[in-house]
Image (cartoon, rainbow, N blue to C red; front, side):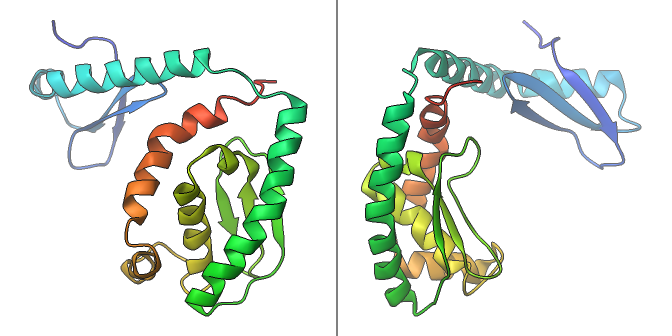
Length: 187
């Protein structure tokens, strides 16, 4: 059955592309792409579209079934993070030979960590729900910004030097992180 339910975005781009965002299929097309050309492209990508839409629906259903954290549970996670994360930051900062500023623990809906230009580090207390390697991968990622304030090849070379299995844990977080964040109240 051909794909008919999608949002079309035309722009000055040169190629057709598709993406799934929040369970909806987006088609990005050049200004001059014909409807027939778009339909042919969608037929060619039909199995990819069906597979990824099914995965997106499954993720959304899983989010609806996760138990919400209570305020007390969030406070406990934040307390655990305030105890554990500074020690892990100090450990990896020594390996990287970098200095850092304040460490702040927050309960955030969109970010796992950040590093300011002044070297202040922020971490999400929900990381306490993830495997320790995931926490360490976020810490290493943010500390490597003390050497490279970008996501260049040099940045990732530094990350991988300290944590060779970084990509495994980053992939775990991309896959499972939305479920952890879904445990926060939707208010």
